[in-house]
Length: 340
Picture 1 (tube, rainbow, N blue to C red):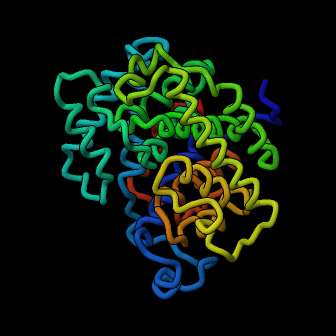
Picture 2 (cartoon, rainbow, N blue to C red; picture 1 turned 120 degrees about the vertical axis):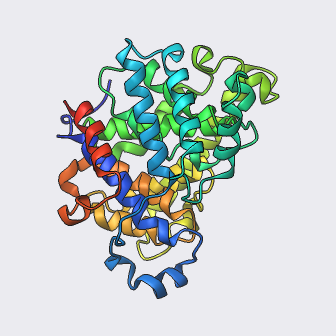
């Protein structure tokens, strides 16, 4: 049962808009340290959305996942058999697109190139990688109405594992989708970490055979349970870093110093949660804090924006920002579908 107040009004539109805004705000600061960002952008609490508001591969792949889920569900209830074809095609199309020029991650590029062949997707998955590319794009699965917990969890893990096969990639993606879902259904930010920790502990020994097949064998683990436990344990450790950071909050300190730089999946989740939970009712401040970090700033800010948008809806974002974000019509189209 979900402890919740009420469904956030237009949560899907708020989430997808916030994700893209965070991405656009953090894209120009990626690969920069904090002093360099401050020299370029001024005080972090006054950071402005760039003109034009161009996004990275984070938003592009979020839209690819969203379209794949929509296509799969046009045929009936969401199943791995219905999802894998559209998802694979969307990822391959993204890989080949001339717009795929936004510093995409090496793991995604390698896996998507291999997915273009007829090989089983588990053979394309990069089982040594737990990069944040797995969970930067998973927010749609926290927004699609009518999914069971098994469908939401399984699909979140599958979409991650298609490219990133290290067990922490699918488990961190599952937790990210769960966080979006909880916030969209009115969960209080103050209790979010406890709910996520309980979810991770409950699922620690559950390998989703129906969704991941024999991926565990490709990763070289002794059993499916050993594979998935590795991922959940790393995620639980990451959540513990957020809890510790928030016991002694330091808003003016780079959050990466406490919860990690975000290049890997569990750190991206942890530091994005850290930024959001520092400012749960100040969504733009949360985005700015995530964008002014030494780490993977676009992915951190896009996840922080997803959490804030799920919590507060589209009214969280300045209209002047929302109206000029790249891919606005695509974001609003998916958001309207799921909000309806």
